[in-house]
Image (cartoon, rainbow, N blue to C red; front, side, top):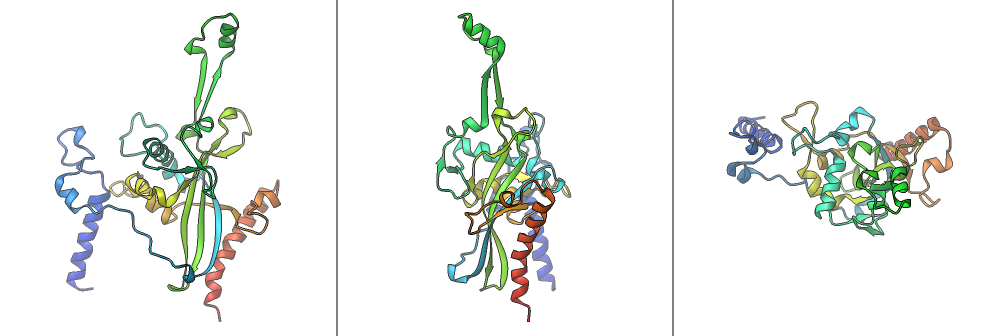
Length: 296
């Protein structure tokens, strides 16, 4: 590597730090200036999601659609879960659920869907029943029976928050690009999963996907939001980069199949170990295709 190449690498590294680091934190004269980029930074900034290359259908030699669970109890998946309490933390740090919900409410994510096939669109009003439970306490019922006006203190409201998200469901396509001769992955959809709000405080409650987001439609939003980098807080990673580079641990719970894309749990029930082994078998089957392409 000659001197010119070294200079280019140093400049690129400096620009990455400038782009992803907390803007203006060392030059701010007041707390309000932290996070606000200077005019010089904005001129140098080309902070956009990395564009997907065009893939022609004729270039796909093999493909397999999979659905995965990303369980947030695992340490490697913590950047998607935290922070759950935003009262005492800066505005630049939010959990993935808060990023998605705030974007849906503001209209930055225009479309949300009922399932992972993206056939039925939903609105924020449609999913309120899955996000909020409003109930009347026993004292409130007594007040109503007495013919009195219901007091606000007797209304029990329970909202789904970032702390209630247990896992994410992710849909993606593994495909072998014969033009480049390699197996690739393209993420297509993501859904936050939480307990049923109507039974959220009881034991053994069922988990339900709250809504599905078509991932390419949310890339701009997810690129603007930064996840915490535990190795170097000066260089946070965007949620778009985190998900596209698969910096998480997921378990396949469904693959497209002739039985109507049935889940692993449907044909292997009441046996968590066998379900995990089946998930690994599906994963290895996909990955082995690339290896078999170069076997003689």
